[in-house]
Structure formats: C-alpha cells, structure tokens
Image (cartoon, one colour):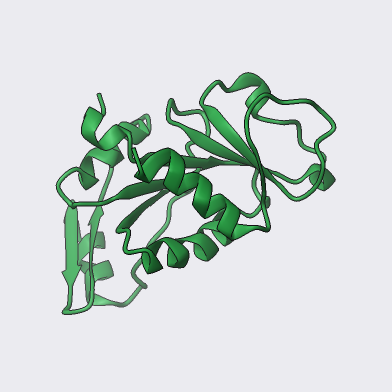
Length: 175
C-alpha cells in the first residue's frame, strides 16, 4: 500500500506507444525544476534493458552475478537490481523507493493500468481509442486536437506545456 503522504504526489502519464509521453516529460520537468520542485520519474520498460554498457566495469560485475550493482560518482549514482520474479511488481513497489528522498512529485511514465491518478495523452490522428473511457484513474486528457467524444474531465492542450504545468501544480503540488 502506498504511503498516503507520498500518494498525493504521484502523477502518471498514460498513452499508447508513440504518442509522446517521454517528449512531454522532457519538456515539463525543466519547467517544474525552475519552480524549485524536486521531481522523481519512474519509467516503465516493456523489455530487458541495460543502463550501463557491455565492457564497462559495472556491467561486467552485474553480469558476473551481483544481484545489486550500485555505481556512483560525485555527479550521480544508479542502482541496478536484478529481478528474479515471474510477474513484474506493481508500481507501488517502485514508488516506495522514493519515500525517503524528499521528492515533491513522482511522475510515472507507463504503468497505464495501475491504480494511480493519470493524465492521458491522446492524439486523435493516431486512431487509438480514448483510455479514459475505461479508466477511472484518468483525471485529465492532454490532446493536440479536438476530441470526437465528450468527456467530463479537464482537457489540456498537449502542446501548451505552461497549461499542463499549471494543472499539475494546482492539482498535485498546492494541496
């Protein structure tokens, strides 16, 4: 169960692949940082991935069998943990990793079926159905053109990053 103190500071971004979730986050995170908010991000990947490169010491140590590999410098650190589970943990397990980090807001990319508040990114030109029709956790839609369906949640301009930031601040950071 997510700690209620941190739960109010979680916002997911849900969309079909290729809609622009990462691009949006890359654009809004600096705007939030300029307003002195400390932002954490959890990004879901649908496949195995490495953040270190083959041949690097951290990669070789992890591949040698280390279940936890932490690499650090004066500029950043990263912890790679090998999962040996048949089912991927719920997003709540990953959120717990931020509980002691004094994060103002955790932005979650992916995990679109999880029970967290989310902004749906929707581009009608891509031909995908709206996710909000079947997901009560979607609290707003960011779109790049008029929707063909009526919805009863806020509609944001996907290309107006200031509008999206104002919504995030008013709904998640000023409470």
